[in-house]
Image (tube, rainbow, N blue to C red):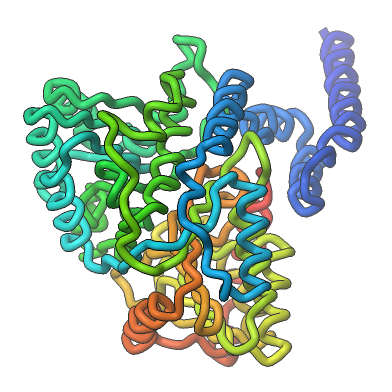
Length: 487
């Protein structure tokens, strides 16, 4: 018996040595150095447990079938002449034109003029606006949300979808499987969609018994609504009541603060193209009919003079479109950068872009929540505050118990970016996101008014206050910072 135990011990040591050696040559491949070093550290410290975790969470592959469908969707989108109908204003600044070209090469969607882009603040007001538009639908409604649920707040919107189906409008509905499944009443929610005649599908489903398994924390985090190819909405809102059905949130009075944009004009076709690609990835339904529209409905005439560009991003194809857009714009700033991100956990490139801007004299401000709703992300975010403050970035904390969940930023007086993407490693590498770049001073001014409101009710974090934190708190922050890179 002692000999057997000794043999097993030596075997275990041998396995751990082999795993460490293999990790040195495998883990760094095609990964950022920070991410590779974090995984290596975990595996070198505890090889068997580390490799087990890595096997579930270390790869961002979404499956060959999904990648093939994504490529097919992109080919159709690139060949769609309808997205090229409106010429871009030749007065667009050259540096913005270059970034628009970058976005086109990465996301296949052009910058298009002739739109009206408007902010939609207010939680109930956003749902009411989308509900009113659905009630005007004559051909189709496309709905896509990370989290969707049936409750007293979303009831008007769901009822409008039912009315739309009843009058012959085709309604398609996508929602993230795990994001929505965890909300109470999920089965009742999907049963209602089915009974109403809504065509629905969960995105990125995890169903191992049906042979559909992947890294379980990949998410489709996009939020968008398209009505008849004429009007679209996108931004940060999830289709759920503002406390997310959590008793603790309701007890604390915690609600999510969101921001959406309403787009009318030819760029709605770009929003529709993103929906179409996701629909095709999940269903294998032919892309063309969903991108072009139903019943011969013509592309909307130019209702305004706003230019905008839709930028999709996500794992599986070209990596980190959102990160490339964000950092490129940050380096163009000469006067002011205002960032709103509930989860600010940057990689090295984004952190350098933000701090370099502040160090070269640009006024940089960051709006975050006073109290994070997620412990690990909140502490990882806090680990960056010292570097930001030292560089001269002003950090404004939105008052608790509210969670500032809106995601947007402005560059000088010329460009605004609004969408579903946080400025964190998860949104860059693991989530399917959607961003809208709008190089229009009028929209920037409107967004600045929103940011002015944030600033007026927030408290500013100072270096003196941050320096008084305990060593234990700093230790936890640094540990959580390391976990953020384990992707």
